[in-house]
Length: 90
Image 1 (cartoon, rainbow, N blue to C red):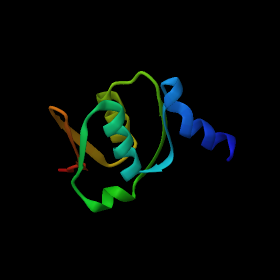
Image 2: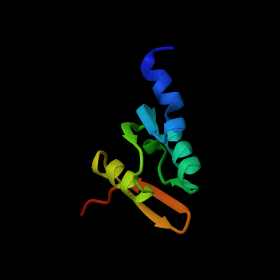
Image 3: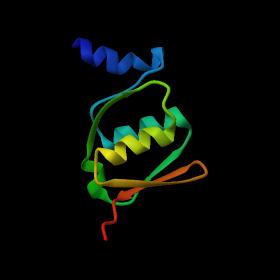
Image 4: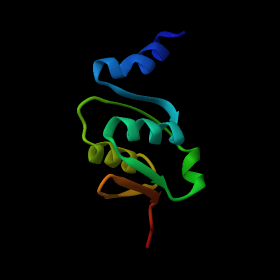
């Protein structure tokens, strides 16, 4: 297993949440486990997105803000439910 894969797969031991060209379904699963939320994806096209980032102490809001800034996505948080959809352009 390459060194990058080892770090990605064991990062949680050191408190790191690591995405390395990670597909959105896996990002959603990891965010659900990490933050105790339920992710709802509004559109199947969003499932094609991939993300690369490393997080340590960031809040769920900060992580979602960074995802929003790096893509054409927006989010809404309602309790422990997070809704992710395409950005609405006017």
